Length: 164
Image (tube, rainbow, N blue to C red):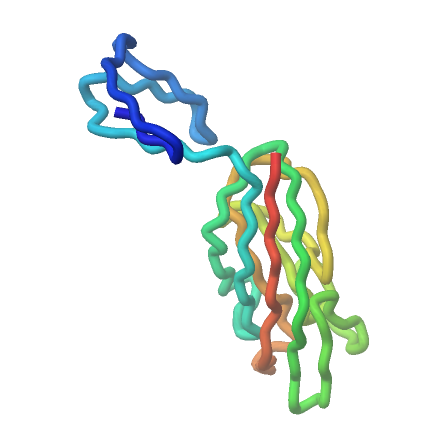
């Protein structure tokens, strides 16, 4: 039975199996093993998670639950502020280079960063990032620490858009 917005029709499936290309490789399903299927239109995906100042790379990367596929166009747009009260410092997703010292992956302190997969290489997302996804994986977001044992309050709201 196939149900659409405009009509419903019934019939029988003649194929003995179905083959699907997935981000995990090609999969084959036997007709007798399938209880039901749901198909959705291929659309652009968009979501807006929040990344707190406590989501510090490399230890605490929040999982956005956005699975990306190789070749997709990825756009990240971030807004918001993080505050370090002891230093009277406020900055946006691009972070700050106002204070010296080394930082994780040599990225600006308090900047928004992203990576693909748990073991992916971090890259600067900043206020806006646009690029082509180099490999399939789940998107993780985080913040570069300001200084060891110095907490930042606030958060960044990140608009994630992925399209084919």
